[in-house]
Length: 559
Image (cartoon, rainbow, N blue to C red; front, side, top):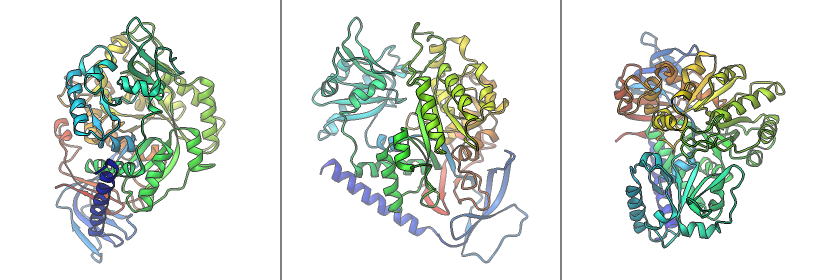
């Protein structure tokens, strides 16, 4: 059976299973779910507790009840919540939906701890998939391997030499290919570095080493076979299943291609779209081809909207592509890679804003964040209305620039798990004296800015409970470092939960539609096995999702 036929068969089976689940769930009728330990964020940013929720026949919240409130008894369905904790459906403010799904279908190296372990896994995957013309995957991390350098094409050849191999780094800002991949793309010693990218070379030579950073990835990516529509449909289904199992009901998709949008629309047309997707296009042409003169309306009962555009201003710390004001401490003379000029950035921002599209700018390094904040300040006064400018990641910000988040009304869309994963690398890249603005969540809030939290999946796990634990402790799953890394930048539990619910909805112009479980909003919620306001950080990381509901329909139930 071919890979495509297999994908189609799995998609059919999974679609039928989803349809069966939805059909078995009460819908289009008033439902009262009582005996819950409900938690939501009120409009003042405080915890509001409730014990029952009434859902109307359109899948919206009709009423929320406290312990002493009188409940209706004339309802179509009365469900016992069995004392379980109910939260608003969790929202990931920054991930990559299709990449997450495709990662479930390709080689994942994120769990490897050495080059040798990675090569062995690549070798086994190739042997198990002899019909695949290319071996594709992601997740390698030379820092985690303790390699002290990038891996090479020759090392990859030792695992697979009979067909091309192309593997994305864990952060998506570099890729590693074997010799056949480079030959297929026509990359040689004579190939020049593209603007905003770098071809890694073997020491003392111009011969490509096998690793391509940021814009240079396109030199090989252009010849890599694209997933077929049936494979994309399956990938979306896999992504939805994974996200719902973690309590996520909505997400901002950062970098929606035209193929991605068509996949979302096919799922919506077929009644298979269960995740709410706030979409940000890969480029201005895609944004306008989808939305036309302005953002699309909300489609499929508030499940899909093209909000705006996601721009890349720099790369990542791991590949030393993040754009810094001062050179890297561990690579003197290198300040990273600006991926567009100031004029290009402002021109695209103006083009988007003129059409009422929202602008989200990827900025990790100090120079990139300063440039993004300055660009927003330069053009913001030219556009009236609520624009909700966004900076994605905002990982390393010069302390002098942090007040600009509030003054320019910029939302900092950040990923708490990046701090726990990257802290040692950040220390190495920057040195101990340049970390005052690193993952500065509390400083941004204290100075009047707004935070939206996400995961950047598949770069990190989309598990929001790991994100909540990281946000309130600044420690990893092992409790390291003791007392938290730069603990003054922790946020409290209310702020962390808001970052994954109400603030994430606000960041995507979705407030009033979902995110708080307010009357009139979509009835998106999750039932879990513990109270996140009381659980220890270790317990919080172990949270088990029991059920996930979207629009008054159950889309996930734990075994």
